Image (cartoon, rainbow, N blue to C red; front, side, top):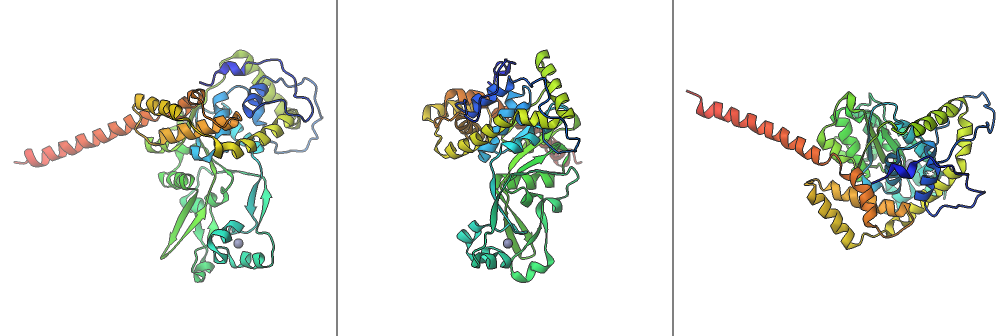
Length: 398
Ligand SMILES: [Zn+2]
């Protein structure tokens, strides 16, 4: 379990200078939760309206949510995170602040998203004619770029999501698209707010792309596959409608976000938000050292992830647990093990422990069984109707 006790407000000081006093991102996370904002203003508000996201590390409490979001950054195989809770619990604030913790990525300079690796795998025809020329001249096709948060608009239609065909490209025997949201989400974070209010068609397209890291568009006899590797983060407010169990099951980690119980923590959260509203730059600066450290730590965790192993006795414990809970979905163990590997990496270890499983189990396993039961009951009702109809048709016809 992630204990909220690790997040009690402790008096603690800034880490000195540039040296990193933390053994791992896990330790850093514990540290900043207890950090208090200074009373004095670091810098006067310039009066210019700036879009500075509230620092992720300045969020009070919500330990499980913070872990889940960081784990999704470290290991995309977790299959995304769904944050479930009412409005005003910091869900969207946390997601927007997450962007600052992600290292830079290589991004295409071309409208069609061509990358040098396309040529490595598919030859020169795998990129657009423009990029082929650039490649021949030795010009770069991509550059390092900050990761972005792509937010799916609530009224998004399927063509906004997958993109629409480019009329002029048909003669090239290769379908090119006006890029949709999924293509823009490649190597970014994709935020799907209020996922329970979207159409099934749109949600299915997003979840398929998230699962495969790509998506295919067909237009007549031509089909094309586009890269779409993103970290999927969904939110839903259960007061505004439920999510189909099949969709719920396709999210890796499920976090129930509640308001803070502890009065001291609520007060601290209130103070930080008030300071942020009057001077966002101050809050950003007070957390900038830790934010930079955390960004490095996320990169380190990503780098060591391929080496993180699960000992057989630990994986057997995980499988036992899933069997004990009567969970059918195969996604249960994928998420449990992949998130546990990410947690070990986040703690700078290359072996998963039982404690890692204990921390991850609630996030990975909750609401999987209920999804099963709900589906079971729906199927059961359908079958009952079928039987009744069959009885009516065959036995009760005079
Ligand atoms: Zn191109």
